[in-house]
Every structure is written in C-alpha cells, then in structure tokens.
Amino acid sequence: MDYLTLKSQIKYLSEKLSRNPIVIRAYDRSGRSIFLRLKTAYGIEDLSLCLDAPSQGIWLSEHCDDVEKNSLIVRSLNRVIINSKLADIKLAGNEDSGEFDRVVRLHFVLIDEFFGNRSDYYIFCEFTGRISDIFFCDSDFKILDRVSRTSNNLVGETYRLPDSYKLINPNKADNNELLEAFSSVSSEWTNKIGFVSPILTKEIEFRLKESIDTNENRLKVFKDILAESLNSKAYLYKKGTKVSAVSSYKLKHAADSELEEFENVNDAMNYIEDSLVGPRRLEQEKKNILSQLNRLLKQKKQLLNEQFKLKEKYEGAEKYQILGDLITANLYRIKPGSICLEAEDWNTGEMVKIELEPEKTPAANAKKYYNLCKKCKRGVVEVEKRIISLQSDIKWFEEQIWLAENAENESWLHIEENTKTIRKLKNKENINKNKNSKNAKIIIKPSFEENGCKYYVGHNAKQNDQITFKIGKKGDIWFHANDVPGAHVILKKNEGTITEEDIITGAKLAALNSFAKNSSKVPVDYTDVNNVKRIPNGGAGQVSYTNQHTIVVDIN
Image (spheres, rainbow, N blue to C red):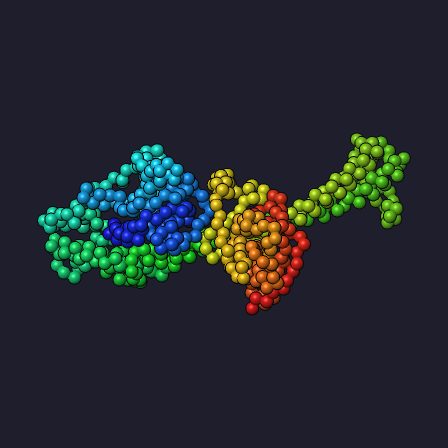
C-alpha cells in the first residue's frame, strides 16, 4: 500500500485501539511476519505486522494462526512487553518536516506492578517494499532486535528513519509551491511532493487523459484524489487470486483488474490474508512439507527392504551350524592344507562340499562356521528389532503425511525432528533453526465441548504429543482410529462420570479426524491416557498403548 492508504489505515487503527489495549503475547506468522495478541475493549484481537507482499502492512483481526518459529524478535518481545499497554500507533515521520516514509511507530508503556516504575518501548515497522523491516527498540530508540537484515539500522544502534528527500507537505504548502512542483516531469513528483507515490502518479496521468494536461489540472486531480482518500473506503484490485493493489482511493487506471470494495483498509487486508494470500501460502507450505515427508518415508521404506534382505541372509544360521558339525565329525579325513571337504549331510543324505581355509587347522575351520552361526542368530534378533522400529516409523510418517494433506491452516503444519533418521537427513542449518522451535509455546484449545466434556484434537505431530502427554491426565480417555493414520483425541471430564455417550462422541471425533473419515463405520481404539506411552527415540506423537477397547462408530 502507498503512503495515503497506509495513513488511512493508521487513522483507523489509532481510533480502534485508542483505549490502550494490553499486550498478551507476541507470535510468529509465516514468512517475515509477526502478530501481537491484544486485550482490547472489544475482546481479544490480533495485530498483524507483515513485511511480505502482497499483504505488506499492519491490520487488526479477530484471530491469527501462529507458526512454531519462535524467532528472536518474538522471544525478545515476550520477555519485555507482555502486560504492557499500547499507548499509541502512528506514522513515524513528521509531515511538517517533510517526512513521508511508510514507517509506523507503535509505543508501549509497561508499569512495574511492584514499584510502579515506567518503561517505554517502541516497534518501528518499515513497510517500504523489498527493504522492509521491523525493529524493537527501548525508550532511547536503541534497537534491541529486528526481523530481517535489509537496512542500515543495526541491533545496538539508535533507530533512524530511512534516508529520503524532504518533501513538500500538500496540507501546508500554498498552491504556487505545488504548481511549481507539478511543472516537473511526472517521474520527479515522488521526489518533491508528499503523499505522491508511483501508483498515485499513474492515476494522475490516467485521469489527465480526460482533460488538458496543465499544471493546474495536475494539481486539481491530485487534490481530488486526496479528498477521495479521506472517505475511509478501501479498494482492492486483483486478477484472479493475484493482488494488483489495495488503495484508499479509486484507481481508474486499473480498470482491467477485478474490483472489490471494503468499508476500510483493515477489512481489505483481512480479505487479502484470509481469502487470497493465506490459502495460496498454505498450499505451498503443504507442498514443501509433503515433499520432505515423502522423501523421508521413501528412505525409511528403502531401509526396511534392506533389513528384510539382511534377515533373509541371516536366517541361514542353522546351515553354518551343520557345516561346523560336519567338519568336526570328519576331522580325521582332513589333510593339512585342504581347501575343501566333501561329506555326507546326515540330515538329507546328500553330499555337501564345504570350503576350507588351507592356512587354518580343521578345528579352526569348524570354529569359523560356528562363529558365523552365532553371528547370524544375533543378526536375526537385531534385524527383527530394526524391522519393528522401521515399521513403526513408516506408520508414523504415513500419519504425518495424512495430517499435512488435511491441514486447514498453517498452524497445523509441522515437521517434528525427534527421530535420529530425521536429524541425520536434515542439514545443520535447519537443525539449529528448529532447536529454537522446541521451546515454542503451544496453546491448544478444546475443539469441542458437550455435556461437561472437553475434547482436544491434535492436528500435527507436536499437537498430538502435547494433548496426549501435557493436557491428558490419568482418568482422561485417549482415542485413535484403529490401524489408520489420524489425530489423537483426548476426552476430559472434570466433574461426573464419563458415560458411554461421551465415549461415542470422542470416538466419532477420532474417526472424523482420520484417514477413514469417508468410511461408513470406523473402528476406534480408546484407553485411559495413562496407558499411552511414547516410543523411545520416536517422532512426536509416535506412541504405543495397552488395555485398549475398540468401538465401531457410524459417522454417516
């Protein structure tokens, strides 16, 4: 959005948040975005700060989905400004001094509850195209942290606005000054006149086609557009799902784009995020995660095939025992330096040719075959353990793939890297990045409440792990669709006895959130959550369980 549109949005937000809302917590969003959860006069609302096009800007919404990034700036914000008040929100530049940068300043005030000491903090959001950034500063505007590394403002230095020309303030300048500025070529207007952006320049040029192009007409068209921008309306131009522009004034030069009108810029930004950008980003993120999961699943299956081949090889243990016994029984026939022995296998009656190492004694050759027999027996035991472990991992990966395919928002998408295989397969950079995410706080609310029961549903590996081992307590009931990928479901009832009806409801939730959701009847296992155990070295949500009952539910 250009300066005029951003100004309209900041005016809306400053009025909406004029009662100094309290900061509950900061969260990460996808890409270069964060949001602040606020307790406002209207309830809990989220203030999004986004640096990525086409939804670059700041807007207020009823709910945002957080992702488990746990970035440095979010951690800094959560250490410092929780329970602070948002004192004001305004454009950072001084228009009277000719500063018309697309930079928003948020001012937070924190009062110490014990001593009453006041601390001031600031967030500067530079919505300046590709070199945008977000800075968190103390009361002296010293930068404590930032989102990216795209400008000259460094952590530890005092924040300063981007370098730019000092522009004419159209609200203060007289007509002669503006006429002189408009007498230059249109490409120079943005360097001389405040409010004028490249998109506004295009609009002035387009509207001038309807009249004679004079300096006076340029000024008149410009002032008409300024008046339009004060009506608080917002106009979104798009081609399919691609956003062309969002503006506080009509763009007649964008007539070839589809137009959506909104009551204000804030509504337009929510529409862009919820209906255009968010779904497209979700599909791309799904594609990326599914690509990783399918690659890891393929490698697990290859390892499993190798283990089956090893098992087949090791199952010849008895053969080596027989060969050793035949050598021992025929020691007297073996001459020094012999390279083989032909002897009758008393089990089959057939002649068997046994290879010998000529440099070894007959007894040593027999011992070699006995040792091979022991090795194969040990190998069979180890391989069977690996096969069971790999089969469990494959089942877990298939479940993660199903969960990712059915994710309804980005907060449901997650790849957990608990297993040794995943840690080896990911590069060092990704491992270090995800170490921080393990400390990210996950907040899971009940998905469904009925008859005094709360039902929790996990939508990814980490949520499954969270509801089963953090939310679930002894006496709660754990559900999972029988032998198919699906979500963990927890039933909690703080008062009263869990009834058969409660069990059926929990089982239906597990069935509906499973691979078998399109089946008419689905078997669902359930047990006390205390009977569910993590699989050692397994991925998050990878469990074994005992003492289960199975119920078949009809979900049609």
